[in-house]
Image (cartoon, rainbow, N blue to C red):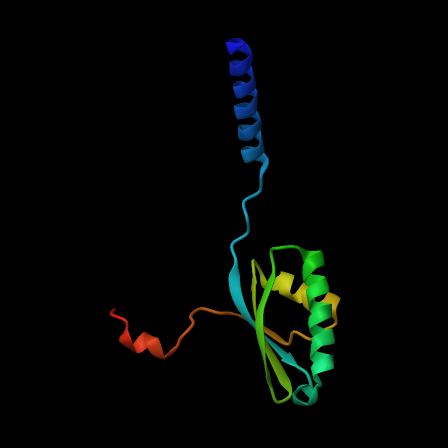
Length: 121
């Protein structure tokens, strides 16, 4: 019985080691700001926003967990979206599949708020 336990544990350890070697590391997530030129965006109805969000979410599910929509702002004829993804290319793919423009994609290098004035260097 002891010999069988040792064999089982050795097999489990070997399997775990093999899986660890073959597993791809998770891609590093970067935050991006996407500028979308959408004439009339400020006039969109709640239903239009809901439909756009549903389309975006469907494409995000297809692309998997490597891309995440954080939130968006509507400002005049533009929509600014914050996403997390390993690359701008994946964000472009999302935009193309969802049918949204992605006129400018910029990596976010820092997030500032009023509390930064109280932080020590």
